[in-house]
Image 1 (spheres, rainbow, N blue to C red):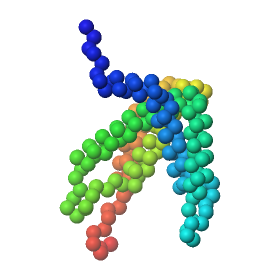
Image 2 (cartoon, rainbow, N blue to C red):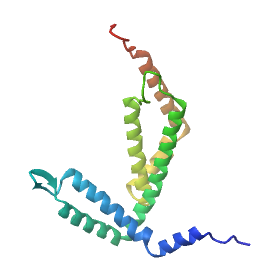
Image 3 (spheres, rainbow, N blue to C red):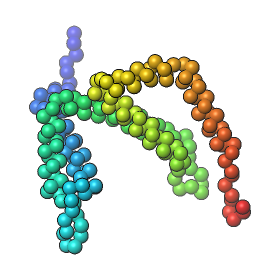
Image 4 (cartoon, rainbow, N blue to C red):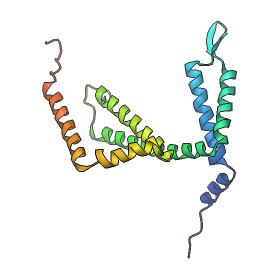
Length: 191
């Protein structure tokens, strides 16, 4: 005997049949993203309002609206966006879980008011995040062409046991060398 679908599952299916996930949310996502980019970069020009330079909101909104409509008109682009967003949200949740774990395990000292992450770690996370998002894009786009070549290269050559072990060993050696060579910070006014 099959369990009855929940009331909320039925509501989600109704919203899906109305096009919420295929039309409305992708439209709002692209419109918001494009509008924010146009507002921040002032790419479409500025105008003076009370002597202050402000972006042209009307023009930014119209161009963003047109781009969002063109994106929604293409079902392939909407499919790629939906697949990418699902993977990116999962990636963000994993990063959040990692950061919460760091916060629980490493408490700031009495002198520190908050937990500071070294700049090298921040930039490493940014680089890894950029690579992960690019891989997510190629995967969502069907891994055709360049994505398939990159995916096959990583699976066949980079993620083999020998290469992966070598990369880990080199990373450990580099971290050890940096920790050994790094000069201790002077305390107070002593040099």
